[in-house]
Image 1: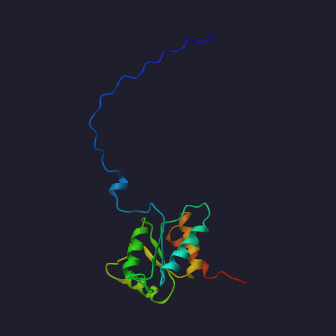
Image 2: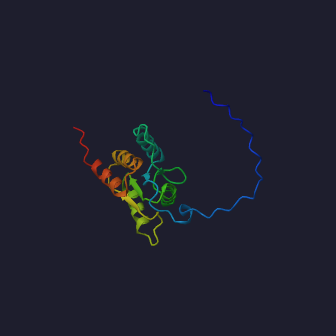
Image 3: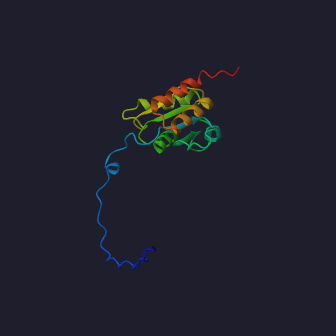
Length: 168
């Protein structure tokens, strides 16, 4: 036996009310905590080198969403060198509350990052650490490990493993 067709009436209009102010969520109230991924900063004496290494590391991730990554290459006027200002800005821009891995190419880049880490108060975000790894291999290792959700210790360990990559 067929069921009788139900009649549907249009809903009656609802009177508009003033929006109710919602209290801040716990996420909005709390300072940055362990919610994001480890930030990655590539520091090179050359902006072009830093950007190229970042591009290659990103391309090698395949379909994995890239981590928060920034470069601090060269000087603010575009020259060759290192800049505490650029490094600090890059580190702050990728800080999601789980630490920031800072990978340097060589020499004064390492000295500048170590100086920033040693300042009181530090100019770098809480949990920022310098990475001891070769620049290209280390960049790929830390980008991938951060992208898949590794914590700061895992990111640093992956970078250190990159020091041992054999090429023959």
